[in-house]
Image (cartoon, rainbow, N blue to C red; front, side, top):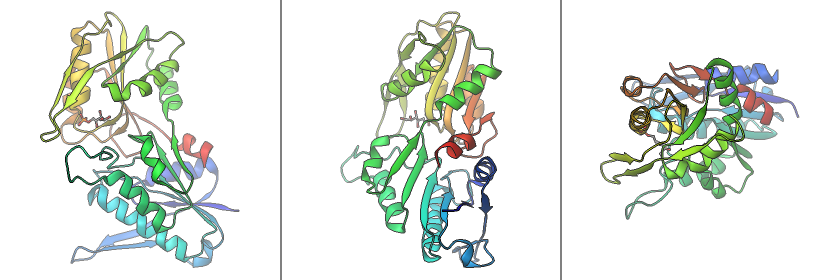
Length: 300
Ligand code: R5P
């Protein structure tokens, strides 16, 4: 079946790069907001025959920094899936490179909504045949899907970039909290067989969102790599960097697959003492980016 990529409004760079990598046709979208606030979106085809019978790959991230915010990006996605289904696509693969709401996966306080799981159901109900994301916050939410679903691992690509460009010596990987320990352990293996992992104690107030972090690190003179899935306000990263620096780290690299970098997150993290922030293009950003186009092309 011939493959084509639909370039979602919030993944223009990554979708175009992936199409180039896969050597397939990319079709973008026209979109606007009506004066009353409603959304208009049209997939840029001359004839609906261009979609009929094709394997259609929709790439649409859910970036808080794009106009309308992450909920609007999901809303657009559901409508794109619906339109592609109506045009009789042969198969629909949906790629959400950064899956927003992934942290709302549990009931922390009575009455809360599990947005993460509900969104998975909505993607399937909209008409997806297969689902992909990258470094999703809690891969267990994918169990909600009845269709095949995949959480792609970006670590090989990020570590290759770092080894090539950053002259890393005597590395140690630091996990900002217990939940990220397995991620950090997997990441460390890319830097050598004996690269150690240290883990912080992090607690977050479920009402205010305030974080507290503690722990002592044996990192004197070492290159510390702090790896997290998401960097949002930068609070977690800044605290981890400060403790690493106080513990005598030579250099500290802040790595986040999804660098949301809300408000003053960049200056907050830099001020804490990092040498460089590294992210990926699951969302568009101003920090040095490792492209996920090859990861997607290898898996789609
Ligand atoms: C939480 O469990 C996530 O993995 C990240 O640590 C968190 O989302 C980072 O958020 P912030 O940058 O606002 O501290």
